[in-house]
Structures are given as C-alpha cells and as structure tokens.
Image (cartoon, rainbow, N blue to C red; front, top):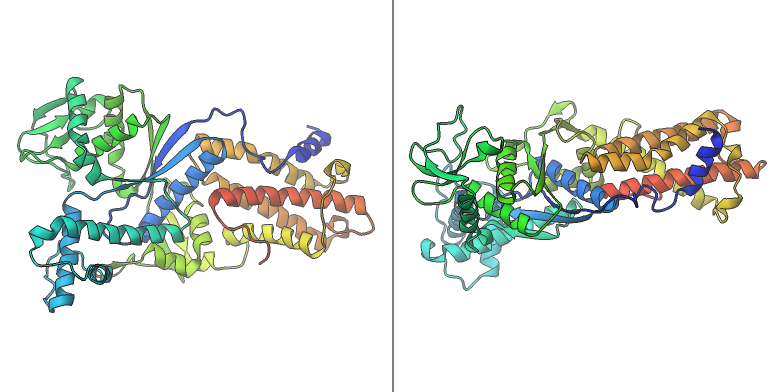
Length: 479
C-alpha cells in the first residue's frame, strides 16, 4: 500500500474504531468465577475472574449481547462443613466452647468474622439445636460468604448480571427433569463403573448407580448421576444447571474453569450435547495456575493453617489495574508468574505502567499546551513520512483485526499484547524527538508538521483508551 492509503485509514478512525459492524451479533452466556461460597476469593480465583470478565467485555465490544453469570455452589457437603464451622465459632464466641479439632472444618480467621457478623445481625436468633436451625443458619452463612466474594469482585471491577444458585436448581426439580430427558433419549442406564486410576475417585463406588452415557459424546468414562443411596451426584446438579442454560436459548455458552476443574470439560460438553441433540454450542476455557513472586522468591499461597493470600490482599498491595492487566498478560492455558516487584516498577519492563504512561503522556501534552484538533479534514498527513510514523499508522490499522481474532478465538490476552506494542512505538517516537529535532512532535516553526504529528498521537491515545476500557484498566490523564 502507498502512504496515501495509510493516511486515509488514519483519518477514518473514530471512537468506534475496532467495532465490527458487519459481525453477526450473538447472544452469549459466560459463566465465570463461581467460587464456592465458603469464604473470600483467593489469588487462584483472580485469574479466571479477570479472564472471564475481560472476555465478556471484549465479546460485548465487538457487537455481541453478553450475559455474565456466577453459579453459586450452595449445595452439598462442602457447604455443610462450612455451616458447621461457623456454628462452632458462634458457640465459641457465645459460650466459650472449644472449636473442635476436626480436619473437615474450616479453620480460617474469616470464619470467626462471619460468625461475629451473624451474631451481630441476629441477636434474637436461638443458636441451640444445630439440626433445627441448620437451614436458616446455612442461608445466613451463604449470604455472608457471598457478601465477601461480591466485595472482592467489586474491588476487581467485576459485576455479574446473574447469580444462579445450585440449591435453587435442585429445589426446582431440574435434576429430575434433566434425568427424564436423558432417559427418554436412552442416555441413562444402571451399572457399576470401573474404579478410576490414581487418586481421583469422584463419586465412584463399587455398587450399582444411575449412569450417564457420556462416552457416546467423547468422554473417557460414563458419569454417575445418582448414587446407590439415592442421592444426586455433584455432576447431576451440573447437568440440571446446563439444562437451565440451554432452555434460556443462548447462541453460545462459555464456561471459564480453573486448572483444578480441567477434568470437567468433557463431561459438561457431553451433557450439553445429549440434552440439546448437539444443537447447543458450548466452549470451556481453562485458566492455568498463578504463581506469586516477590524479591525473586516464590510466595506460598497459604499464609498459615486455614488462611491464604486473598484476592483482596493482592489488590490492596498492587492495585486493581495491575491485577487485571497482568492476569490477562499470558494465554489462559499457560501458567502465569505474577511478580510483585515487576508490577510496581515504573519502567518499560512493567507492561501496565508502560501502557498507562503512554496514554497519560499524550493527554498531558494536549492539556499543558491547550491543543485541540478542530478540523481533521484540513490536516495534511503528507508530513507523516518518517519510518516510525508509518510503523505507528500500520500498528493502529491492526487494532480491528486484533479485536476480531481475540473475540473469535476467545483469547483476550491478545489485547494487552497489542497495547504494549503500540505503547512501545509511541515511547520510541517520543524519545526519538529528544535526540533528533526533525522528529520532535512539537515544532512551532512548522505548524502543519506539528498538527499532523499531534493528530497521529491523538489516534494512538484513542486506541489505547479503547483497549484499556475493554480491560477495565484505568486510562490515566496524568501520572
């Protein structure tokens, strides 16, 4: 392409630059975080939370209608143990009872805080017979835990549209309905599964169970739906939840899972294929582990028994922007090393700082000199003939394709990569003006040249702002 092509392209960029008006809009449900309501979010949850949220923003930006959902796992043994833990902490506070030495209970200090909150808000509540008060206490515990989680999410800049309760799914008899559908399709039978290899014996027992033929859909083993004692497996509830998703008629379902749930991919897609006769599209994205480093040393996630480095700890130390940017600065299927020293460093090595600083530098230049670009049509871009200037225009031209590919492949890490590359070009351009008068952006003796260069960096700022908005990372006007 000749230079005029690039100049025309630059002039065509506006606030909607990068949005594909020709893209067919889809109705998408993205479920992410879905941490058990048994305490605050820990660092491990941060990556999936940020990945899911930025993916939702990205899909929305390119023209899709996106619903952000959180599945509350408020049913089953983990919740029961959590409620029991809070109950014993309440007795400890009220009656000086000793907290039992039981490995199944939750020992963290936050459990004491939850117990104190429940006591404070429910002064007339009779905490006598555990069995009699269990359901009421369970609701109070889940409410307190979800308040902690929502506070953490808010600090991360995350707000979900929907919260769907596992308990609700079970109480609405959706599990029975899902089972009936699978039975009618002949995807259910009674049998004994082979014992799984290794330590993972999820819902396995050497007795007859109600099983789902998930191997028909590519899974490596059939899956138990109902145990021999008549109780539902966790997977059965998950099947019912996915039936609920299917019935809400989305074009695409996206599940964001942690590395510890990677084994759920096939069984989830199998049940969706079976329930929808392969009509419902579902994609699962797995976020690999995060390792924390400080002063060159890897930090332990657990601070002491029952306590762990929380999402809140991380945000308080380095800020929301650094957490969001760096948690997405690697492909989700690669392990991520989060370096405290790097994200607090004011240098090129810190991508968050480098991108934000580029935006702030441009804003400061316009603000301090009271520049305004009033009539873009009159600006003569023929003055932009330096190699670095053409490189910048070409990089700006890549932005729509970057967004298109990021959305198509569900790979939001491409966005911060691109922003860093664009910011690097800008800083090189800015600094070269300090070394070479011919490359100075401000040149009062050549106002047409100055106007063209101001126009160029204004377009850089527009794209940086657009990208940072997708990441929900602050685009500062000064630093």
